[in-house]
Amino acid sequence: MNMIYKEGYGCVFSLDEYDELTFAPLYENGSINLNEFLPVEMEMIDMDDMEVFDIRNQLIRMNEIYVT
Image (cartoon, rainbow, N blue to C red; front, side, top):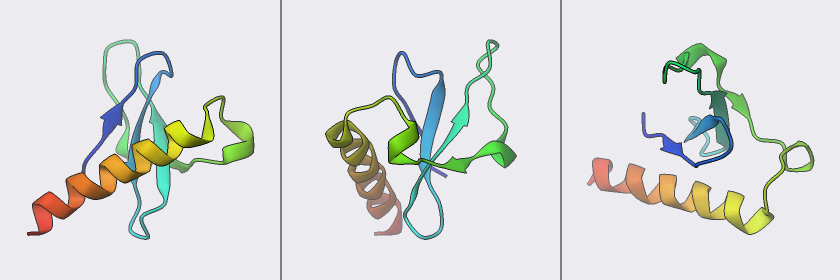
C-alpha cells in the first residue's frame, strides 16, 4: 500500500482497490490505522481540486512502478 503525506492536513492519502483517493488521520505519535481509510469527498475537503488530482496521480504512478 502506497501512501502520501502532505504537510498541514493531518492525514495520509492512498488509493483503494478502484483507484479512488482515500485518507486516514495521522496521529500525534506518527501512526495511522489502516482500518480508518475513508474516501475523499471533494466538497468536504479543504484542498484545491488540482492538488487532490495531483495526489491521486502521484499514487497511481507509484502503483505502476510496483506493478512493472
